[in-house]
Structures are given as C-alpha cells and as structure tokens.
Image (tube, protein in one colour):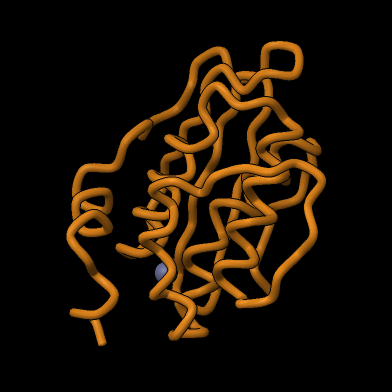
Length: 148
Ligand code: ZN
C-alpha cells in the first residue's frame, strides 16, 4: 500500500517540505488536527488584499499530510482568495471522486500526484487536513479545526 502511495514527488515533499515554518507577519493563521492519524499542523497566511502573498505551515504530520501541506502552500502562493477556493474545490473532488462545480477554472498542477490517496479513505483526511486548516485561517475561525 505504502509503495503505491508514496510516489517520488510525495516522498520528496514529505522529507523536505516547502514553505515550512511560521510567517512572522502572517495576518491569518489556524491550527488543524486529525485525531485519526495524529496529524497536527498550523497554517499561516500573509494576505495582501485579495492575494495570498505567502502561505506556510508547520507542525507534525504523517508523510501524506506533510506532502499535501507542502504541495498546497506551493499551489496557493500568489493566487487570489477566489482562485484558492476553486483550487480547494478541485482538490476535494480529486480526493472524494465527486465532481463539484466551480465558477473558476483552475489547474491542479502538481497537486494531482496525490490522486492515489483517494483509494485509502483514512489517508484522505491526512491529505485534506491542510486545506481545511487553510480555509479556517482565511475565515479566521478561532477554535482548532479537526477532520471529525
Ligand atoms: Zn496523517
């Protein structure tokens, strides 16, 4: 199972995650927890008007969670809030297999490497935790986000 999941790019991102660490001047942040796996991460966002100038994360997650967070921060950087919602929508569709209609057309890019995760329902929560946490940061929810 792990060999199927842990493709090269996922492994690379889990071993050396991009955009890892707190953003000092972040104006949005949130914490996310996945009790099924024990993933616990924080997402930091530096929002400049409607543009996501920087998106970082830190904390401790499994390989899938860390790789997903790393790929997410790369994919989100420089996007607008509207584009980030479209990207989340596409990613969620990829993970759950159900197509969601979005207003904005957007390419998943590298995030597509996580498609294999959908075959392992328990791992889907690891992969989507960073996204739910990012959304919580954007909407400035105070209480920690969980996948439950
Ligand atoms: Zn996990």
